[in-house]
Length: 337
Image (cartoon, rainbow, N blue to C red; front, side, top):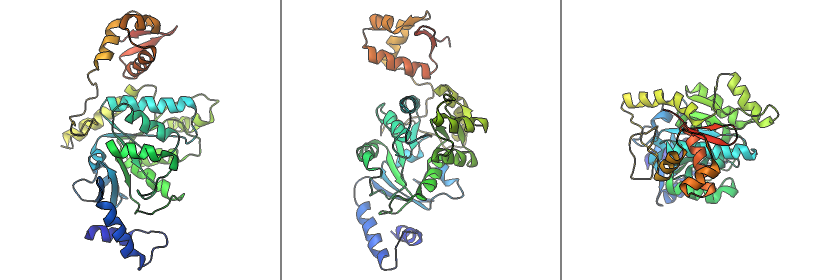
């Protein structure tokens, strides 16, 4: 535990004095005795390699959950704390596609877009990482306490802050560099011109990572931050395939250097990343029913016997995967590969 003691002694804990340090060390020791609680100093085997590349990488990380997920290939999804309904849906749907395609989803556990991204990953059987701006013994925001527990059970909560660290404004820009630093790229879904999400995007660019942004209506103030990013060189994203066009060379480079990324599936079932995953049986049935002539949702329901909500959700995923195209009149057609 010498590394833990050294780290705590060097950490700037608000109000800590020489008398408080032994109590803080004991507090961390007790916390680390609990299942799925981990301390990973920089240079240790489990420290994520991408994060370690940063000149200001954290000296150590506290992790609640599975520390192996920190080394999975990840995409960060960030955005407004007060998004539109469409923004929430986009974050959730992109997260769903990303985890189906073998990536983990990283975000900051904030209300809004972050929450939608984490939820989209979890609800689709994927792995998600929440980077926290407080100590891991503090539920922040309180409204996401249940979500935090779900993330810890199949993914990971991570923080560079010692236990007991409260939420302060200065913590979150520091937190943001870890979100972008863990990830191959950052997708901004909705953001005002003055937004913490734009800080994350700037940090991603400075770290040499990819930056993606979803465009929106010129009348939506939450689209203006994304539009600024696009003007400054971020990749405009309309489908998840736009993201994978940029990430495939990066994943190939990881494999070439021996840092073989693992697929973000359930624990114990990690394999090489698959960017064009095999379809589940239900999706195969729907694709076969669709064929190469345009058809509407009602026709597909009749042909497959699937429920309307299932068909609508599956069509969205297939469109994000660039397997089908939407046509005028609410019709869909299978894409010729």
